[in-house]
Length: 178
Image: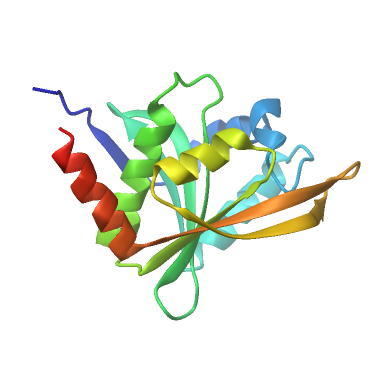
């Protein structure tokens, strides 16, 4: 019998600000962001306060055994039950926890928020993110060449989508493999 590891997503609170900012400004996280500049605490706090004012934006902390290990942002589109996500892990987190973050976030998206579809995107050279999306059941829905200029180079972007019904199929397959 496999042991289940208690994981959860909880709302980000102001006491998480410094921790999340340190994760976000870490070079291993920063290199995969559209804004690669170091973010100041003041700008981070303003972003947090703006996010709290928007009921369609969910900023969440991923925890395993009550230890914060990652950040998830889900932005719902105004209509149609479609959302977009972004996420990152605490840089020193052990391998395997990213998949737990993804599974926990998808359960939240489809059970709690009742979304029909979740969209994600990745720099095309971020192979770990691409494998991560595919492992969770996402389908690549698009690709844009030279879509983002990072200050030195143009970068390609891959776009992903996961429908509720496809997520359900992945869940059923995973249950059958246990």
